Image (cartoon, rainbow, N blue to C red; front, top):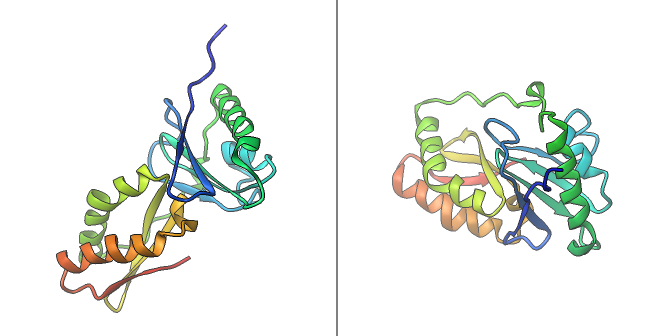
Length: 184
């Protein structure tokens, strides 16, 4: 008999989001957020997690899953079920997110490439430690458009993360940038 898969539960700055770290690779690259069971209908891992009452969104990254819950559901009530769903998935051999679900990238010009390089090097690792990710969505008249997902998408301190972290760094490094705005 094999021992159960180790799944570490890691708190995030968002009290309604927990990160579940695993040893196996769930997806080869990227992060994918599902905000409803309908949206996750073809994604085996998020679909299993959405079967648990109180789950509001699921983010899948290569080595972790971040689950956001509603305000009324206490974590101790659903964490064991989430871990069981993850273990069942890992035993299934399925892909967490089918390849045809992978979103296409936004076209990136030279300035966009510089922004993405800075986000990838300095911002994404810190946000991933908190169970989230930042997605580049383009530049509009000097304003960088980004989307915070996972624990960061609904975190009370996400505005501070954008203003004090992302915007400050981009303004210092790239004089042609005028600001940062969160988009859906």
